[in-house]
Length: 341
Image (cartoon, rainbow, N blue to C red):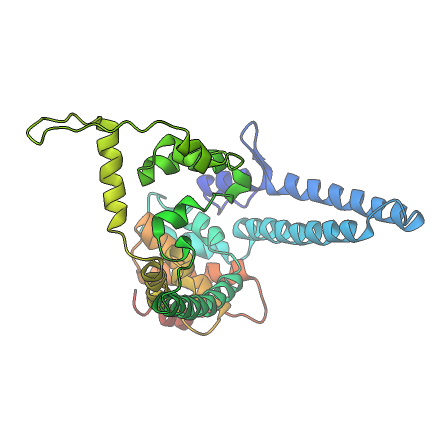
């Protein structure tokens, strides 16, 4: 892609790499957009065929795929348009002139343009995620607190309940790991006995065997050992004894759940890094979020200083990137958004 002479060579290379891609390394946004357009045409053809033969194809699945591909097409088109504006917009020569003032040898101009593009994301979903996290963590705290109290009440009745309700080792012993489609199912089962200090036969018993009969048929060998004798204990058995003793000092399940309740109650959901900088205020403002996100990238990753020229460059590039007649970014907006910087 050709760029005006005002665009520094390194910036031209950066934008071209994103737009056109780099052979044998990654595709460009232009090629990705073309691929999505082709995929959308395929789905539309399949949908038309399905309408003629409704019993042979799942129309709902095709509609779901179409919506997903259309959303991706819209995102790619917006990214591609933003990259082109960063090279061709009428305000960009002034941006490069301002950056030239702080970086006469051209260093960090490429970094500035990259950050200007990278800071352009939709922060609304992160704000929504924080709202949900606050609500969920409150529910976790309340439910955990109630469950802990109920376990204490059950214990106070004197009725013997299942050991899993009170003993952490027993709870671990009776709980399998089904995460990631049982990826660590067998590994957890094999490691659990070592963690709890159990013997091998205790962890791999066959439930079909009557163990009371099995034990009664085994001869019992009782040995009397003088008290002054030195008894050698198998190191593995000694380690198991130590682990079983350690687990015997562990708190009850109710105490564990109470800790979960306290942790959830004290937890303050927040985002970090660029996203955290953008959504730190209560009110949603697209331009304020963008300015703060951009400045975080510039200052944190590239050690920019907030000079007057950089403030002006941020103001101009924010208008170029956001590209909305309803959002006009002024230098005063930049100063307010970065007043604590």
